[in-house]
Length: 192
Length: 356
Image (cartoon, rainbow over all chains, first blue to last red; front, side, top):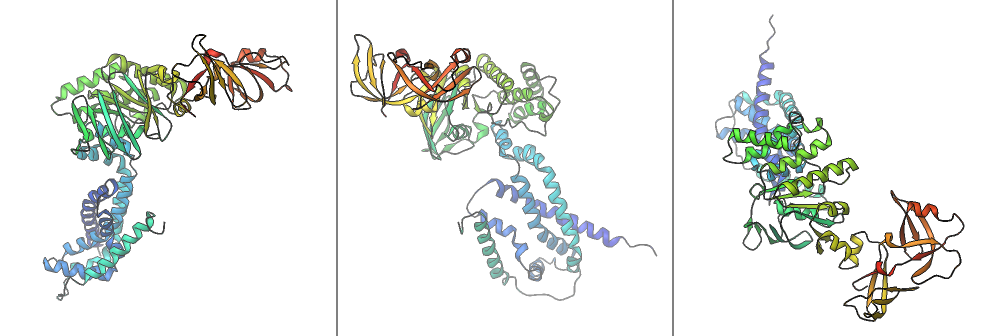
């Protein structure tokens, strides 16, 4: 009996797409939060970490509801989206750490030499952070791949659904508050 | 010409500097790097105005704040900041690639000319970690100059360099000073660098400019005791002027435990309280053999003698420090029990500063 490779291939494909989707969000977000201070940056930081603090069942349920509105529920798109959402915090945190580790003096030198922000990022920051970024992407991919089993069922339609997306709001608010306070404590602005 | 008046993070300064090398001299934390960063555009001052030639780089009142790339300031960072993932050639090419309207051929021609000028042709294909420190140093300055900046900002790169590298560094800066018209603003804690290279010096303390002028003038006439301490001047004693005789060009100063005769101090009045200042190298010291001290000789107990590269530093009770040539010290009679010495304060070496 020939060995069926399709589940493995499917898993790799889903994990690859989820990682790609996730890094496209995580990289600019990480750069923004690693290099800029602006009002609401801590909330944005908390929002990016939200999937870490939401119970999986809750997240899956409300993601199903949200995807249902776009007629994406129980499709491979849904599985990829969920996987990307779960991978995002890990990728975001690792990417931000890798960008923050790049010595500012290289970026300052690039700017003083006439480079605009995009060129500085593309020619200086990214090449200097590539090892750590590659490690982050790999970790994100592994996470998405391992989670494949749990998310694959989203690709199958049990011909039922419905509900409202709104109950996620108080849960998200609590999670955001918890992260916000956690960040303040970490920076010594609370309990100092 | 750079004109700057800025206030940021405890720094409040106003100065201008034209051609040649201007040194920002001060202790660590005096605000030297902050001033350079504010001019380069890395730090936004709370208020003030920075003008480079005829262009306003920053104006707090009208909210003008040009980004670093539009300020035309070359910047040499403390740790060089050559891009480690690029060869020296590509490091030099980087600023030209950012300049609009410079054709590819012209870029390569300029890189080639700069590599030759800074003796970097052989090192050009290598990355910074694979070349010698001297080549790294030259490449950093070459990269900062290749875009033809209006001002070169240099942030204390000589700190921690060995003697050979320091000489190389001074040589590169001399070349910049003598062969280009780019004014240089250099921050340093090294007085030798000031004297060897700078035409003008800004003495910075806790975010304020205490004094400015040619380095020799600043060192010879510190504006006050803070300036003198910053310049590393030892032998600062509170004193009172008890007599002044312009006819004989003499004065008499009363210190805590003794009196000294000095030159006439123009602008001072009898009864003025001043700081007496005398360079350690201008004091003469000899073991006390029991004779009565002559004029301006003070008996003092030797507390410590320490070796210096070309002299011996003698520290006496009362905070008197003398530096005598090693040969003179070795010729003194050796009597380890005799800690009593006579220190001679030559009248011409006495200077007075401010009020205590």
